[in-house]
Amino acid sequence: MSKRALVIGINDYAKIKPLRGCVNDAHNIGSLISKNADNSRNFDTKMLTSENGNQVTKKDIKAAVTTLLTKPADMAFLYFSGHGTATNLGGYLCAYDTEAYDEGFSMQELLALINQAPIKEIVVILDCCQSGALGEVPSLGQTGISFIKEGTSILTASRSDESAMEVNGAGIFTSLICDALSGSAADLLGVVTPAGVYSHVEQSFSAWDQRPLFKSYVSRSTCLRMATPKVDLKLLRDIPILFADADRNHNMDPSYEHSHRAAKTENIEKFKGLKKLQTAGLIHVNRKGDPDLYYAALENASCKLSPLGRFYWHLASAGKL
Image (cartoon, rainbow, N blue to C red; front, side, top):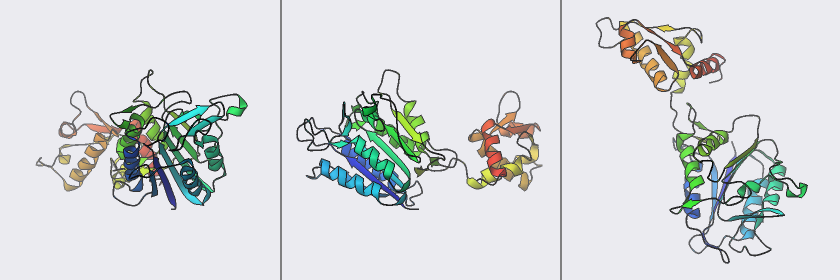
């Protein structure tokens, strides 16, 4: 699969206040998005940062973004951390040479490139002030109205009229994005999607803080990164073997406990699998008091699938895992 990523971080500006954490944020994102948790290759990543004397100009941003979005690919990822601003003509990603009446790279131009891109799936993450302007068409006289093509997901640090906070040299939004990509937003298989990332980030802000936005027009879940799976795939596929029906109990007895004189190798292995499923919240024990499987087995109790467990039962039964 052809997957390209462009990661931009700008601390240094000629005529506006410099920032402290954008370059570090960019490197953190670049490191995570380039490889999956098992160190396998993910995105082919290009970094564009204002460090070692490099000045990231409007021309540099436009050239790099145009290259990212005009060449065919299965998936493209764009991250920007720096100053952002908005006028009555729309939003802008601010470059080193930003000045009055030349605010930077236009979000309207970025949106046009996204909507014309020969790329199946596009994910854009913006950590800058007024970043929520991406996707809006101000000429219509209405904010909050988004126009993006199918297969596109946009996550922004704030609404079109809000600032994005930086604390101790790091963007709060990007710090949460990194947590999400590292596994906090992963499903049981380790899949991290844009929707999962947004859910993780959004819950971390109060009603008084900046409000991150998520704009998406997709027909399937997009995998941004593979984190460490919480449950082995083979075990998930074996759920229909342990539970013949999604609503049927799995009966246990002392032979499931390895230290019992009646222990059976086959049941000991089943017990190990059931324990992992319980830890992941996929099963519940039908027993009053202590829900530990050890006591449930000794007392001939049973266990059943939780709602999440039934979901994975159906996926496994349909051969979708």
